[in-house]
Amino acid sequence: PVLIGEIQDDGQFEVVWETDGLVAGDAWSDFLPGSKDLIADWTAPTKCGNYNTKTKTCSGQNY
Image (tube, rainbow, N blue to C red):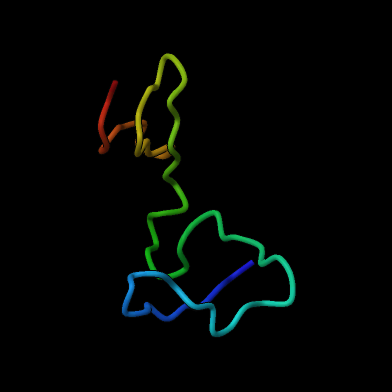
């Protein structure tokens, strides 16, 4: 679900609005054209937090 909250004086959140149910996530951003080619793949041999499937390069951290 999506929750919209308001921060209270004590640092806690009060929910002021929420969806009725679950909201499907987007696999990539419609506003960042190249983001559809990016994945986070921490499995061998890639082990990359920002792997570009089109260019076969890693622009994130490698571990």
